Structures are given as C-alpha cells and as structure tokens.
Amino acid sequence: DSNQAINDFTSPIIDAFYINSENFSEGSVIGSDFMVYATISDDLAMKLDINEVQSNLLLTLDDETVFPQISNYTTISDANKKINIAFPLENVSCGYHTLTIYASDMMGNKVNGSISFQVYEGEIGGELEIDSTPVRETAMLKLKLNNTEIDQTATLYIVDSLGKTILSEDISSEYEWNLSDSSGNRVPQGLYYAHVKLSAGDVLKGVVSPVEIVVLKEK
Image (cartoon, rainbow, N blue to C red):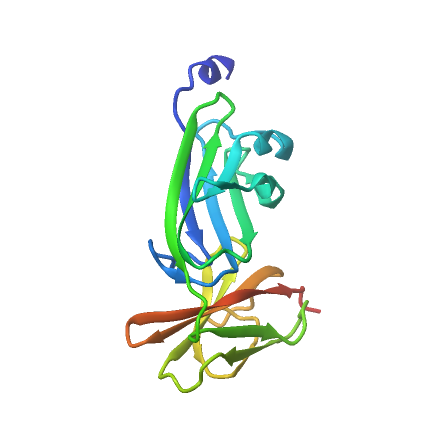
C-alpha cells in the first residue's frame, strides 16, 4: 500500500549477473562478442514501464563506456518486482575489463554490482556458424577453428534467453542440435544462443563467440 511504499528503504537485489551462461565465473576468458545477462528484483516494485526503467537502469564498461540502450533489452515480470536483461556486446577490445550494472526501485533505493572478465582473440579460437535460423526441427552448427594443430577440446553450450544452460556437448567440426535439452525434452519456442569454449584438460584456452538460434513451435 502507499504507506508501505513511502517507508520503503530496502534496495533492490541483483539476483544474477553473468556473461554468456550461468556457468560464468569471475575473471573468465571470453571472446570479443558476448551476451550480458542480469536479473534484478525488489520487494515492492521496480519501474512500471520500459521508459521509466531506462532512467534507472545503467550498464557501464570499465566505468567509461555507458550503454543507455540496455532498456531495449529488458523485460519486467513478477508483478513489476523483477527485471530481466539480455544485452549483446560486440567488438570489446582485448584485455581485462569490468562491467558494472546500476539499478534503483520506484522509491529511489539503489543497487550496483560488477563482474570482471578477460577478452582474448588469438590463434586459439574460431568461428561458430549456423546454417539457417529460425529452425523448427534441427539446427546445424559448424565450428571453424583458427588452429587445428593445438590439442584442445571444443565444448558447445546452448543457453536460453536468460543465459541458463540447457545443453552442453563436446563437438568437433559440426553438430546437429535436435532442439532438445540435456534431458531429451523438446525446448519451447524462443531465442537461444550457442557458444563454444576451448580447453586443454581443465584449463580454458579460448572461446568462440555466440550465435543466435530462433526455435519455432512444432507443427
């Protein structure tokens, strides 16, 4: 009620903030193109529409570059108590970086959080392609490695629009995804992303930037 809102001094909570998938860990090596995911919630309410969110939601890179268009990649759920963000970043320079997100609720209570990562584009890497999208039955993915003489394992990750990993598989040059998750269940229609990590043993050696997969409803 109105009295509760007036006496609201509780800041929103950053429930999730990661890159490419929920398996992201602080300081991870990633490619120059990637997806940023975040979920922020409040006990009463975040902003009621996307225009109000825009002035109270901010993403920065290294405290220098500001991305005001993040509001265009934001959805509101749970009776206006939660915002979900899926924001693409491209051509980020090599090196160590920090992303910081800032948000506030309807009463102006604020919260911020940061994650750090490293961008690497070298001989260990490659390109992931998809034959066509949208898809209704299968998605054919093709991996082209920059250096095939290096002893490395390529692991494909398919994540949903919130960055939740639904399938991971070690692949070689091609992989035909049957649009099922790791339990063999057909995934719902919607937007998905596929990306590849390259490793030698337990050591991450490189990454391949994600591609979009639009899954249509079964006939």
